[in-house]
Image (cartoon, one colour):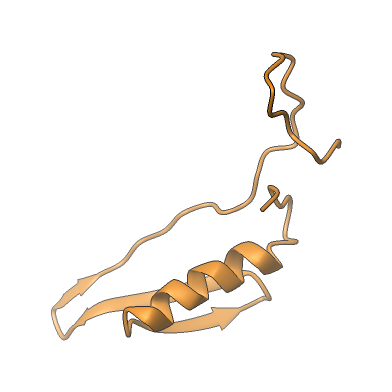
Length: 71
């Protein structure tokens, strides 16, 4: 899997959606890449927020594995 940038997060959002389905967590998907999930019920609900997109920077270090998408 390669990093996805900006609002082009189809694979990442699909992966998160699959995990939520696997654990039977209620969620809503919007704007193609946004996901709101509800863990718990009533007054005991956990809300999580995370940025899922990658930063558009080039790594100058040399490793045997480097970013495959050049921006």
